[in-house]
Length: 311
Ligand code: NAD
Ligand code: UDP
Image (cartoon, rainbow, N blue to C red):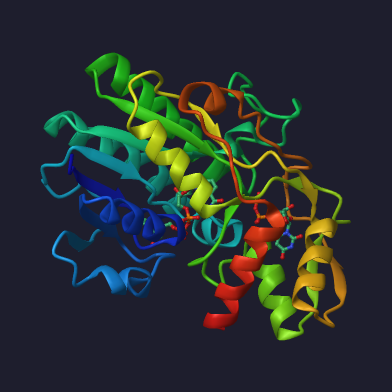
């Protein structure tokens, strides 16, 4: 059945792909964004659709009074250089954004979905990370505005649920990549592909032995929609691809695929950069029958084709 769905951060990388997916499923979409790291051009192809509405608004302020069935809260800068640029704005967005979504959800009875993050595990001492792990996060470092903001976000989600009966779903997203990432986003997959395509130096931070697990956007969004539209579990639930790669391995893959002459260059590791990360996705497998289908090699091919078309 068609639903009225608000997507905050809807003009960003994940948000614009989610708008498109849910619109194609026959829903009415309200896409809300302040264009801090997102772009109108990401949703330009949806603007003429009768069931798509774009609202320019900052989630730090109370949300417009619209009647919706579901709210996906994705508004928040997600790339370290962008969220560290104005850390107070980042924490305010992460915290007040959740509160304002929950207040609207409480008012109109909508289910609220929070895009949380693997960053709640910090620099993890447990590997791979299950949802039961409480994390190892520096509360005062340069990543704290984002990590702690998202942790408080989860706290608000569960307290509004317990105290006010708001219907919630919480997903913890592990590094996701794909079309509509901003070439200037600053995250590792887009940086390496853009550098390789332009023949520029590949910027490895640290010695490149730190690991991440990369999920292709289509896989992730299928997990979002499954979690949102079932009654068995509210989360938090990890969504990510358990394949684990060092940044050196990622760079070598990208260079080989692009057939690039770019050289690897080594730069200081940013503060509090997690050494390893890999999701335990047993919960998602069990409750929403979800696991990623797109292998890193295939996803990188699609992402490379996208970046070729935009740079
Ligand atoms: P993105 O930067 O492309 O998208 C974020 C969107 O939120 C942008 O369109 C931006 O303009 C908007 N925004 C930021 N602050 C806002 C504010 N105060 N008011 C209104 N809009 C605001 O990043 P993304 O990768 O699409 O991430 C989307 C969400 O998913 C974020 O909440 C992020 O924390 C979460 N997440 C993403 C990943 C990932 O790997 N992509 C991993 C973990 C969590
Ligand atoms: N990284 C890198 N070169 C870059 C950008 C990032 O080596 O040009 C490293 C970064 O230090 C981190 C990993 O890649 O160890 C993933 O970084 P990203 O910013 O994509 O995400 P996050 O650190 O939030 O997982």
